[in-house]
Length: 154
Image (tube, rainbow, N blue to C red; front, side, top):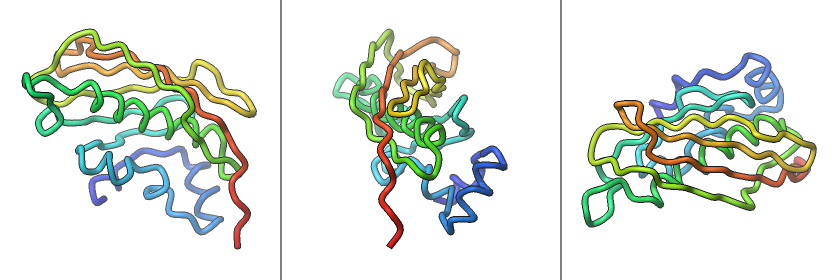
């Protein structure tokens, strides 16, 4: 996860998780699936999460960006936002993901930007807009996460 070291986190988030002995970069990464797909989180806060993903290696048989790949990028970014909103006492679990695919992408990087629609005590909903390198919208997604209490430390 060497590339993940460049993620911009608010200092209060870094301080909160460091005090608990948690590696904030690893905790809010793209995970194993996202890493295999080349997802890179560039910026992360409860107000805005930005990430990129290459089209190459994430296409369907026609050579276009696979809709499921867009869904992985969207769920990753929205989940990170929800986790940051919930703080260290909560974990975010996706319960609803809706993706509308507007246009295809054949090459380059796509960029997703997740912004909150609703941030409550028990749920958080994020809109994720994915664009191509020409800044044309490829996909619009909405993710709702349930915020559950984090398991007690052993």
